[in-house]
Image (tube, rainbow, N blue to C red):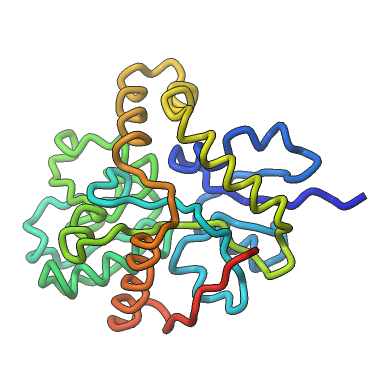
Length: 265
């Protein structure tokens, strides 16, 4: 009997629509949750077959293929990837980067060079906004910590990187997608992941409520986030945004030059 395909997904709210119902398909897939950077590391180590891979990390795995049609993306404000700053952004001298994702760090470098006219010293730090702002002038925070952080309580301005990217390029941004080695996913598994995304988007309110069970204020934020801030289609505009990001990030030395994207059947 063929073993199930081992999936590695990010542990944040934003992936929940993409894994909807997969727990009932144990004959085809198994699933684990980790921070984005660890998903890429697990894929590299062969601990998983397909990972929800940060866009930047995919460039380090030449030959891997992408599940078509599905991603974690945004067009305009994303709410969960942001710089929190206590200074005007062009005056920031030190910027703490969340260790959880290389894609957001690469985008930060692009926007500092192309949009903010800033050249801060970057340091890495665990995802704790208050501690990061104690260590630096500004902090890049991603995922749930960014989504639920109270900028006013932090006495900081929240600069949404999804919004800034779309203002600059008029394109969506692709944060992550399913990827793995060429033999990792059969057409049946690809179809399963595509259908999970369709079904998950139909049940986004239910997923938000379950994820934030017992926290009504967060449930309101989570519902709005899944409905309004995220786009899960890896369509033509998203692919153009992804390729544009790869070019911009390579130009500032944040990622290696990209080759052509290859997709599973």
